[in-house]
Structures are given as structure tokens and as C-alpha cells.
Image (cartoon, rainbow, N blue to C red):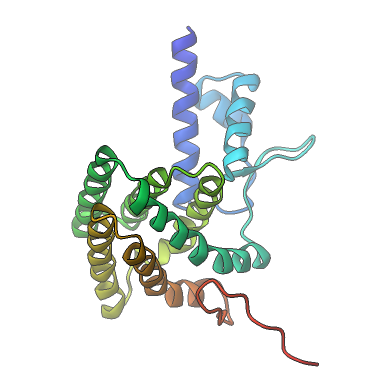
Amino acid sequence: MKDEAKSRKSALKEHLKVSILTLRLRPGADLDEAHLSEEFGLSRTPLREVFRQLAGEGYLDLRTNRSARVSEMSYTTLRDFFLAAPMVYGAILRLAALNASNAQINDLKEAQQAFKAALRSGSGEDRALANNRFHDVTGEMSGNVYLLPSFNRLLIDHARIGMTFYRPQTGEMSENLSLASQQHDAIIAAIEARDEATAARLAEDHWNLSRDQIEMFVMPDALDVPMGIPPLSKPA
């Protein structure tokens, strides 16, 4: 019975993660606890345990005497994302080049093959999830207990706001997907060569590739923020 309950909790957790990353559950949406309890055969206590785990990872917000909801994506959180993402991604890839094990490098290569397969024949959701897995492996490579939670939180919103990037509507966007795949290959090569400087530079190139399109999708006035440097306030 314990193994069965654990399996149901794992299934619920994976279901919610995928649903949030692919926007099947929209930012700020309330979770239907009664429906989830029935669908996964879980009572309130294990259900809430899963919610607490996901809240700790940044997928959900928990509120007193109210249902759990999907983490918000407000103007403030998006601005914080655009400011923090390039700095954190650069640090992660630099550390990945220093610390990656051979087994992790093989995992990254497998993730890249899955990404390429998703680009060839997968849906927008497939592509976003495959890209998320690729970057998730680089986070594992970094081996930094302080940086990794921030990186994992960024990946949640990167997947959500990047859904438009993986549903290209123009020829230029399709070309960018091909370039993103090429950059993944270059990242793997830099990590395998233990070249931290190149890995950090590739993080910047990779970020800049999708940034403009994501900004146009999520903000009417795109942020003009240099790589990792907050904008200076204008004099009064």
C-alpha cells in the first residue's frame, strides 16, 4: 500500500509539473483539489504533501484556508526573471564545465538527442519540455547547493514564457530553433572540454537568441537590459 501511495504521489507531482511548464495550467490558476484527489486516488494529506513539495520548488503558491494555485507570472516576476536569468545561466554553465562528471555529460548528450527529435517531429510542448530537460542536466552538473534552487526556479518560468519560441510562426523563428540546437551542441563541447569561459559565453549567446521574441510576447515594452546588468535609473 505504501508503494502504491508513493507511486500515485509521484504521478500527481509529474502531472502538475508538466501541466504548469506547458501552460495547460495557467499562471495563477487555482487547483481543483477534489478533482485531483479523485483522479489520482489520494486523500487530502498526501495531496497536500505534493503541493508543499511543488511550492518549495516554485511551481505552486500555498495560501491559508484557500486552494493551492499555480505560481504567478506578474510584471514584477517577469522583470526579475529577465534580470536574473542571464547571470544565473552563465554561472551554471561555468560551473558545469568545471564539475560535470562523464555520466552527466552522457545524460546531456541524450537530452540533446531528445531535443533534436522534438524539433523534427514534436509539438511545442514536446520541444519546451525537451529544452527544459537539457538545461536541467546542466544545473545538475553545476553541483552548487546555493545556485541550483534559483536556477530550477528560473527554468519553470523559462519553459512557460518560452512556449511561443517553440511554436514558431515565421521563417526567422524556425531558423532560431535550428540555431538553438547548434548552440546546445556547442555547450556540450565546451563542457566536455572543461572550457568554462566558452561555456559562460555560450550561455549569453543562447539567452540572447530567444530573449527578443520572448520579450515581445510577454511585454508591450521590451526591457532593454544588458547581460546581467540592471538598468540605471534616469535622472529626474
